Amino acid sequence: MKKGRMKYIVLIIVLIIYGVFMYLFFGIDETRERKATTTLLIGNSAVWNYSSRSWMNITNNQTLSSLNWQKFTTYVNNQFFGNYSVWLDDKWYLFDDNRQAVNYQGDLFAYQADFDMDVLPFTVSDIDDFSYVNQVLEEHELSSNASYTLAKMTSFDFDKDGVLEDFYFVSNVFATDFFPDKYFSFVFMVKSGKIYMLYEDVDQNDGTNGCRPQLYTVADFDNDRDYELILVCSKYSVQTPVAMLYEFSDGEFKIVISNQ
Ligand SMILES: [Ca+2]
Ligand SMILES: [Ca+2]
Image (cartoon, rainbow, N blue to C red; front, top):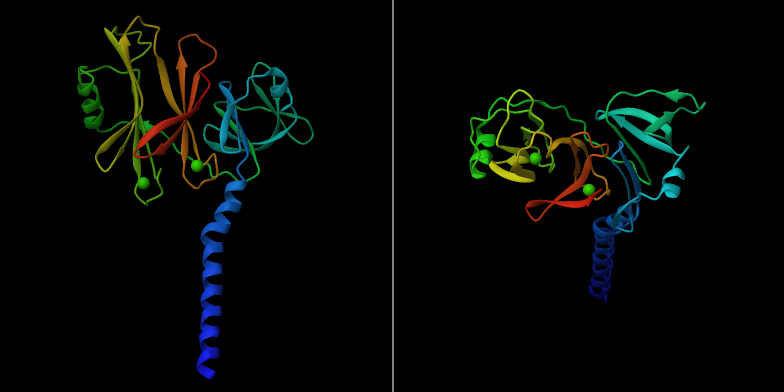
């Protein structure tokens, strides 16, 4: 009799532990996934909306103007800038709570979301070691003895494993003091000695074609705990740059949404 009761108690305890375990690993996950609706302003390049696990370009003027006077969390040149109301004219203007204009200089990233977005600050610096750049140039049959109009890098822990990844940005587009036969633009990540390409463009150079890539924002835009990143590529004398949001999955970078 006593033994039989003990069995039930053990069974109930096991069921409770199982229930708590399932809640922690699946229940919380589902709660987090539900909170993933956001609108992103990528400077003058794009306005993207994410809801029900899908991305959408917002280009409709009526929808865009419906964002006017709405409050956004803003970053300028990858630094937190403040919570301001936005207003779209020739660019996004920012206003404080007293509707006083707030000036900003540089690249604006702003979001509105039903969750606190994890935005990763970073700074770019000159490339000190060109060995990976030369490897990429040689793989594209370009001379490693190249002149550049862009040669920058930055490092951060993109996959959150405690080790920094290096991101390289190189290009020779829009050169004025030299004239290469071919232009190139590359953006790639190096992790454990391996190159992962984000952006590659090589073609005949006419001095004004191609575009100049730039890392714009690194953040967990969809609240799934993995970082994604936004590249912006500026064309010669064209107003709207190309904007692309990348995710890293199955060992490669994929474009999730672009304004093109
Ligand atoms: Ca890492
Ligand atoms: Ca994410």
